Image (cartoon, rainbow, N blue to C red; front, side, top):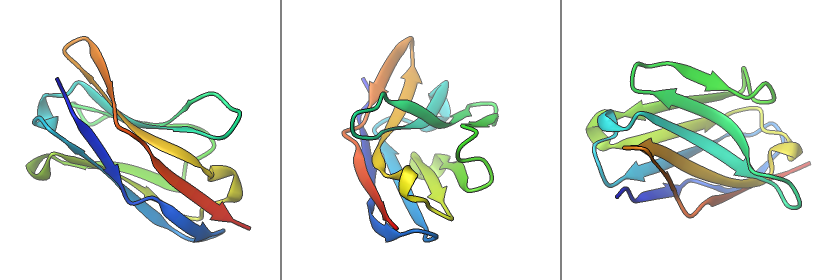
Length: 115
């Protein structure tokens, strides 16, 4: 069982930055894949970025060059640094962990980007 708690969302103007955090209840060095997803109103949940235990990072085309995923194993925390935010980045952002053949989700944190 893995508990994930996101934080760091909020309201920001276009062009601004936010950093999301995801604290895990287990050692994240043992989690196969961790990632961030987002869901905008009326849309399906979509992948934003993932980070594997071997250090591989993947990003959605829409966020490449603007968002950076990272993790601090000592703090069991994953981050998403979001720069040059756009109104279309507005969504609820969810932390995800794939661990021992199960998917775990956090409760989500709202990010709102005003134009």
